[in-house]
Image 1: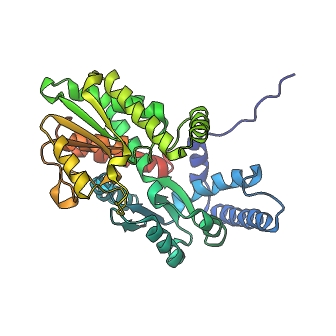
Image 2 (image 1 turned 135 degrees about the vertical axis):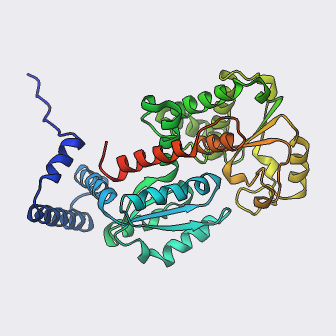
Image 3 (image 1 turned 180 degrees about the horizontal axis):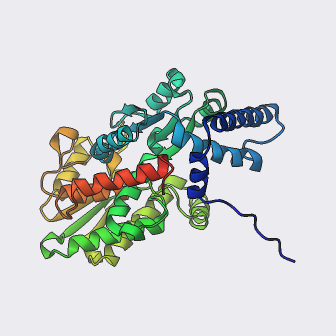
Length: 370
């Protein structure tokens, strides 16, 4: 005899029920929620339940959804061209929604230790905030329980993933992938679609493509479990770091996507991470004389340089120690790639389209709407 699954209301049905509540009913609901939170935290701190147990995780999901809709928002990130291009629109849309948003923006190249120091010295700013951040400016793991259980803050979103949803909506409309850009398969669909669009114009076909492998796996962090396990086994067997093996895997995937999109494999060259040199002390930057000399050799017309956004390489002289003047710099992860392609006029989408898509995504994620 099969047991019938209990009925679960949709978000729309829940919202409709909430809209019909009286002020007194809302106050009672809020009080019950707060009492439940105190009970869960008390059980965790006393050791009655584990923070990763089913009861705690179920409440955590409920808490995060509540904070997305109701708590003051705090965007924390290490700056880069992608965020520069979109943060103004993000803040504008939240203002239209009547949401309070604070920001902490670390300059490009800020060291991890300095970000961790900021968290330690400014943890009071996090109190009762719904935090949206990027992976490179994450809350230090040793502070996470304190942030949740003592400060009442929660990490409720990721800026890269939100941006990916917006840009995927532009590319695919209603057929946009449900997953985010951390997933290899959705990244493949995203990237191949963009590249095929570029190649529709024969004048935009590159003569040479240089893939700089440095930092390349930083943002494609959700490798599927099976592949992640294989990477770990190979790294251990061959005596190399997991990050190094993951970087090689992601770089190989980018090569595959380029070829699948219609580019010739013989035009594609992969530059190993070692080109950065041991003397490089600046996070992700190419800056010493050997590196600049190498970049000068590949800085040629009709060349694509595909690099992670942390390497500091850019077509804008004012933003880097190693400016690229002739080649086209196309940055990863995929959200950055879209923006770079757009900035080079390889594809054309209006700012109005992008702003409207941001409105849809933010209302869906933080306003309780479909």
